[in-house]
Image (cartoon, rainbow, N blue to C red; front, side):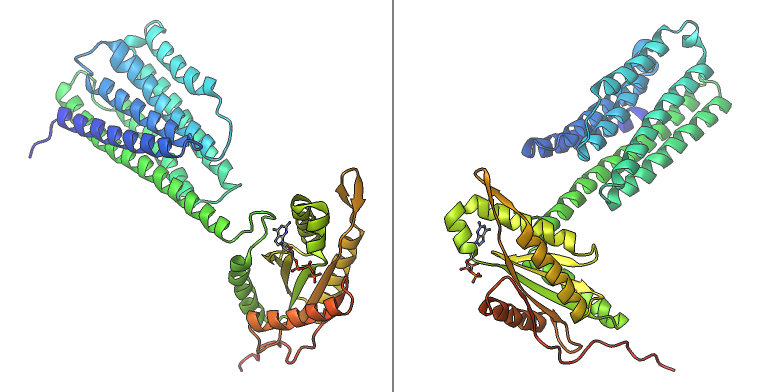
Length: 395
Ligand SMILES: Nc1nc2c(ncn2[C@@H]2O[C@H](COP(=O)(O)OP(=O)(O)OP(=O)(O)O)[C@@H](O)[C@H]2O)c(=O)[nH]1
């Protein structure tokens, strides 16, 4: 079936319209993420530019050259703006509007440019490549804060696109004169196809990136405690299994602390539930400072916390627990212009070679119970049965 540029143009417009409606619909459902609104707008601009370019010999220069090129730069700028909003950065709307306007004005009003094809290609190529590189840099910057596979893929795709624009400009400058309408028609066909591919790639990439971020955040939330932002019981189970397995492989000791704030019901009753929440947050901060970044701290529920300490023997765990207990007891907690203090009881055990996390937790709980019955604000342990040792090396 022979294809003609108008049919392909219609298909291109339909594709951008579909993505625009899809992204607008998604944006309307979750208004907090206006990246999607910017990307929908980018589709509207990309479709407009395709229409302008498609009417090359039917419509005047101001539409097919000045407007078409400026609007396509506007589409890249809208994608860039969306990328910034996607990572919660401010969008300088001035840049999004001013740069395309500037390109349009240069193309329209620079004396002699209407007849100077080479100069036009150079100017437009520089502007487009700059717009595309802005997107690439924005992706790279955002990746330092939050890593997303699809954003890295998009970064590569936009970099390839910038190279494609450069190569295409080189070929166009060396190619046949623009007056050869049949060749221009074929070139237009190829260009529309390539634009279709490009449009599909960036739209699909962006939507998959939104999905990836949403999934990662849901997973993060499911594993976290809403008050302290520490891992919750579920997150602790998952992470502690991995750390324990690694320690077993390395033959390194691993210890476990179970920590329970003392008389917490009384704190709630005396100072109120909000102050009780503050005490939980104070303890969480002190515990994070007392532990190493490789240790795993979690709020196991209510006023109970636990921590897994890789590369820590029983003696080291007891020392860490004692330091934490003292730090917490010394910390003043403000209440209505005065201060009070709270204490914690801790059960600390080294995990045995034949124990799983559940068994170790039960032993640490028994040690904690001992600490509570022995008067609270203290650390107790339960003897380990068999230590994790270095696995024997074959041969
Ligand atoms: N403010 C606040 N209180 C909580 C939260 N989760 C659990 N609690 C309260 O923590 C208290 C725990 O009380 P108990 O289990 O009796 O323990 P305790 O008073 O600390 O006594 P001991 O552990 O024996 O020293 C209960 O009153 C719970 O309502 C929370 O997220 N915020």
